Image 1 (tube, rainbow, N blue to C red):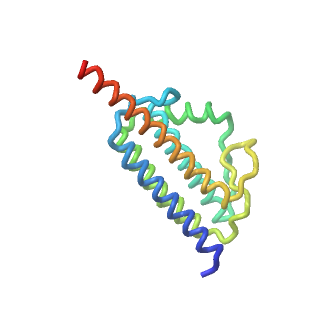
Image 2 (tube, rainbow, N blue to C red):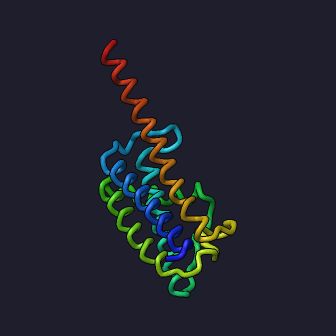
Length: 164
């Protein structure tokens, strides 16, 4: 196996771990927990939305097919995601994220050239596949980290009120 293939496999394994940690966290968290910027439901909704977009783009790239990218700002698209997934339970959304991850890995493994552009929305800047994968992982981990911190803070405040 070449170093490049090993590096790709490590990136995919690391992304898998991040997604599975997120799935476990979001499946069992209060959807109204807020990190001061987003609720858990808003964060998970947009993670599912974007993961679906990643699958659609990578599928198109792997199959040499055209794909029309979403247009709008990230904030607008994240709001669209929240509205789209309002009727789903947190568990259903978490499960959907896990399923989308399986699809994403399947299509990524079909790609032989990871230096090609991996766009995610119209007007976005160039990101190669090999650069986008760690960025996706970091985005997921950041949401989970911020919400875990918010959960610890909320629990500490509840414990303090209970003790007072």
